[in-house]
Image (cartoon, rainbow, N blue to C red):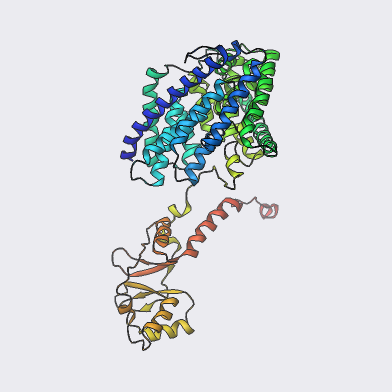
Amino acid sequence: MLLLAAMAVVVGSGGAAAAWLLLKLIGLVTNLAWFGRVSTSAANIADAASGPMVIIIPVTGSIVIGLMARFGSEKIRGHGIPEAIEAILFGQSRLSAKVAVLKPLSSAISIGSGGPFGAEGPIIMTGGAIGSLFAQCFHLSAAERKTLLVAGAASGMTAIFGTPVAAILLAVEVLLFEWKPRSLVPVIAAALTALSWRPLMIGVGPLFPFTGDVVTGALPLVAAAGLGVTGGMLAALLSSTLYRIEDLFHRLPIHWMWWPAIGAVAVGLGGLADARVLGAGYNNIQDLLDGSVIGEALALLLLVKACVWLVALGSGTSGGVLAPLLILGGALGALVGTLLPGDTGYWALLGMAAVMSAAMRAPLTGAVFAIELTGRLDALPGTVAAAAASYAVAVLVLRRSILTEKISRRGRHILQEYAVDPLAITQVGQIMTQDPQTLPAEMLASAVSEFFASDARHRSYPVIDDDGQAVGMVSRADALRWQLIEPDGTSTLGELLSDRSLPLAYPEMPCSTVAELMVAEDTGRVPVVDRQSGRLVGIVARRDLLQVRAEQRRDEHERVRFVQRTRRADAKA
């Protein structure tokens, strides 16, 4: 843990540098493509989007991305987080140098040329690639590489948004698939390192400050939950529509390299309808929080942004999902907020938390991300209510999140539910077979063969000496082999088993340790001995371990009433 934490400081610095570089690349491409100037400063595409260039520029950028994906690396397609998850779970957390270089470059071209995406997905993939590449320089396990990959992803997200706690929660809810000190402490170290670099590279303070009033009380919390339900339904609609659009692209009779260009046509048409939908649109998020987008403009932003984002993402181009989800959630919240008390900006804030939580199935991340972005800790009860309600709707309506659905379509199904391993909390003494049938160490090999030929009920038996201590395990296969090696069968079991190592378990040992022992020793039964005396007290088999799982399943699904209602007859008696 300490070694990985120290390494995570280096990875966190690399993630912060990558975030700074990505933002500068986006600014450079935006200024070159739309304003014809060489500058890396942030620019609003809506200020220059007019005429046929609104279609020509996005299409040109998408053609370049298609070429980069086909002749560079296909992994730069998409929004980055599913690719990071897949590398963690199925690729031993190994990402290539190509991804580290081409992903930010392709994303900068995509966003800078008008693609309706954010920088967070690409920086998660890029930061993860930096962590993975750094880890590959050392003798580390796949689990340790995963920790550094996720540390890089969390540091990149922290540097872009200034949200270290949300980045850590995202790591836990979406990327790590565990909650262990070995992984959590290094991820925290990387996120805090990136946060330390952020004032020098990007800036200080909340990225989208909210200065309006926060509505408090019981009824506003109920309204927040109601908004969360609406946000969950919107997220479900977005996810299902996205993959229907992706299916349509897969039916096209042309190479996938050209799909982003086709999607860019829809982006350009959307830009003609409302130029605010082009690019990352961070200014839209601030406008929604300020309450400066109202009426028809609000509905137009929600509708057009959703359409162009879904088509562009479904085409397989490069870009992120968090910023579009924030805009769509904010627009939905502001629309609903016109019917609720308080500033529409407050309800926009809650809408952002709701849609992000439902789409990514990360309720803690959604709730905290919204308040860190705006610097309004007092809005936390509302964001929690909205995020929890939207999350509940999402898990009831959709089988998978917008992130894991893409992976499942490749035949790899991911469960985003964490639970305590029942084998880790069950002791061997609770499940072992006590006083098992044994064979004496002085038993001859010939007698062993006869025993397995006639009386044996199990495939293997523990062998004990005169003091009741286990000296080995003998199986039916051993008896058959000894018949060939020693036809006379005059050797004793103790002599035949003297050169074998014997895996042992203790009554107080967790069953998970025994399961690992069985895998390591390639055995299905392990003797259980008393730790003090060494005497055999039981035996545990694979079937016993499976019974622990079966018991857990019964606990989850079997409903039993322990307190019965008093019957009328009993009352009369």
